[in-house]
Length: 105
Image (cartoon, rainbow, N blue to C red; front, side, top):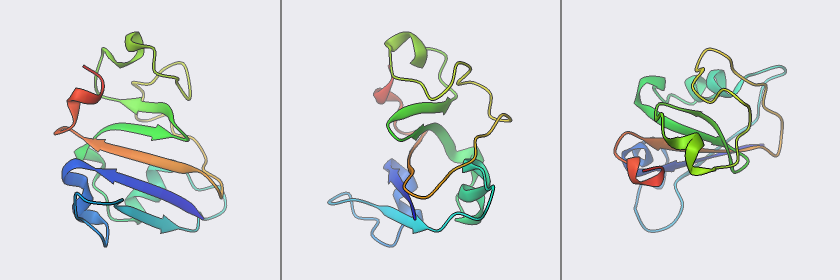
């Protein structure tokens, strides 16, 4: 099972969209499925994502300052949205939309 934690306006895609408590989607990954393919299958528009964390490490961002703030990174180039990674059971994704820029600024 993969857990997708949603923050800010992205909470609306989870069953519990309340700002109190966690807004989480749980899905079984398909064999060889990538993080972005999983998010598309969950019905989350990729265009609304601003930062994606994989197991607490920054996977991809639209913010040019993020790496300089010393967030642990899942890979060297966190600006490449077209270079996805395969997810596996037990992984956790954290999704932040454009309304949550204070996390990296």
